[in-house]
Length: 453
Image 1 (cartoon, rainbow, N blue to C red):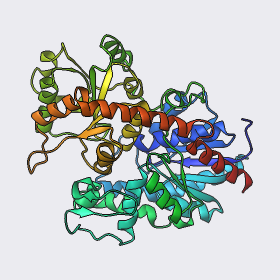
Image 2 (image 1 turned 90 degrees about the vertical axis):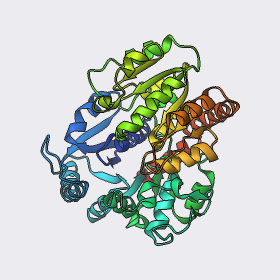
Image 3 (image 1 turned 180 degrees about the vertical axis):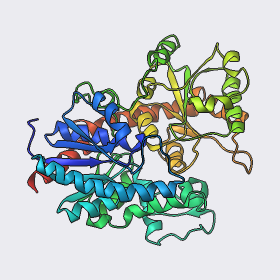
Image 4 (image 1 turned 135 degrees about the vertical axis):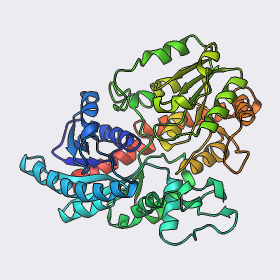
């Protein structure tokens, strides 16, 4: 599409789980004619620039207030300094772009940074928050933020409009355990401090996936579902060479995993990954390791370098005939590989959307934040996964449980049903992103609103 003179700023929170979906959204906007500037902190700028050479997305660095290598003393300290410094830098950037004849018309900002909307409106700009979590999780946080749900929770279940009854363990961990991360609880609840002033709410989901919740939220506010925000190669294939996110670690042998998978039978491998942030304790790592070994099947397990010392002694050597342990792998390529039969995951929203979009059943082992709610929907609403159960007060999932859940997903009748459901969601995800699909129409409508404003 011919590019317009409409300049738009996209401003994600500076972590991969937030940058990746907002970067993919930026590609969609650019493909529809908008001139997109993505704002991120200095360490992220170079890999994004190198990866986005095929897309007319301009990358602008912004300071978070910390020098290279400097670390905040606490989460609270980082958030406080980041808001103060980044809000000032954002205003300066908008003024700089105006002087360089790239005047910004609109800002799409990460919903966890509501202050970005205040800054934008002070400069005469409209804005829209981008919600990187599901509609269901966002709706739960909204109810808590408005005092519609008492916390601590009274009783064993919680009820919300357009959702199944949720147990305490199905709620986001910041709510079920309020004392765990109070600063992060304030962060996620703060998303609703000024959201009614925004032009619309952009949510990384698609209509059919959360039909009832989307309908409820749409009856309250101008909601636009624009997901799943994964590279076009795995959905509609309309964006040329859009194969990955662009924040992959450098200098890694990305072909090793695929070569190993190529030698395995169709649907014979359990792919195991707990994302870039989740950290399992040593006892849980040991139970997981032996659970994989007991399942007697093939497994590909991503264990970050800092976590490797938690593995049982000689585990890698003793399971070399069945398993491959790596520090990183190209997750989308792995999930799309015919050898992968199921995905054992922490159930982060990005990983969940990837598995749904690629038709891969899941064994879900949520750790914190929104993962508990995602796991509930994966297992009980979408029917594409089985959720492990902890056996003691420490929350440890034992090896026998892990073995049983893997076997159920890979071999049992429920596993076959999960695979059928997963294939259905795969087609619905593609349908949403394809020209004329619900998410595609919402993005087109959003672009037209900006062009006409």
